[in-house]
Image 1 (cartoon, rainbow, N blue to C red):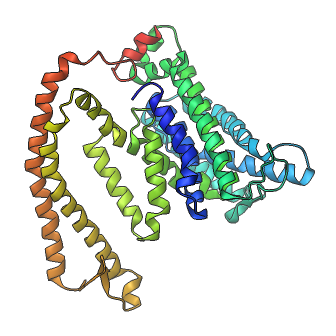
Image 2 (image 1 turned 120 degrees about the vertical axis):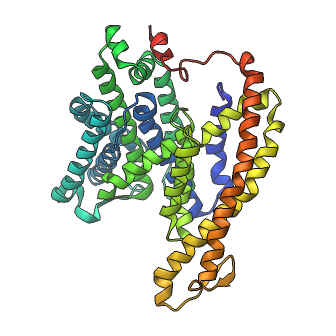
Length: 430
């Protein structure tokens, strides 16, 4: 997965997306995905690269969005020649500054202490957003019109395609900058601090200074994402500073795979799609997001992209066919189990939700079911239990195939690089 191929696929995907999804609603969705990608990658500079678990990263995203919105309104009313397309730089500067100021206090502690401090800062900013109504706009937030003011290259930002390509530009530039940062000595030292801060200090470097720099830079890129969101949405509310968004970016990074650079990109796309599109079909979409996150944490700790990455050496040695029988044995019962779980969730929501007050029956896949009948609940529960039980033989066979393949290709695999082998980042820094 190294080299230019992932970047080529990434760039081509950004360019081709508005021609594949051309409706106005789809353009809005993929524009928000580009914003989420930058936000998730900025969080992974802390979480995946430096090993700092933050519960308040949305603070820098929200502050960047608010500063960008204030700048948008100011430049439009004063007719100053500052292009709207460069507003993410304003958000980035705000995120960088506050990331440095807050980081000077918070990164003095690592691990759980840092996580709790970031959580407290999130509470503080959420309270300030309601107290300082003149700056934050109260519950209604601030709004602006990105179509007014000065624009570059003849853009007007009046069409969804123009807005998307602006978001895609900032997404690609920000992602490339963060990838470059990861490959610099600072990026290597951040990974070294993540793996062994005592050894880094023994080498003569300050883990505090390294964490502070990475925290400030991550805040800067989160601010860029906030500025992008201000242009895309045309409104910023206190929710941009809230815990929900801080939790979402954590899910994005972990869901896609915090151990790889492009993992948060995958996580941002998947979670954004589920939040925007899945909510159109069910009001219980948050439950499904939580369920998927739990399953990924338990069964795929390296994320969705990590699942792909572990299969690359197997495919390179043309041994993928050995895994297919076990996977086939798991696929059907797993699908039955998943379908039954969705059925139970939707039936429970219909039984205790708004449909019962409207005297509406429960339908699933166009078929009516009696949600008050114990038989319906019993059959659904039996399908869940049976599907889960039938997965075990397939998992056992797949695990045995993995063990055989590992023994065969292990001598042919090159030594792990500094990005994957624990402690190697410190050696690379030395």
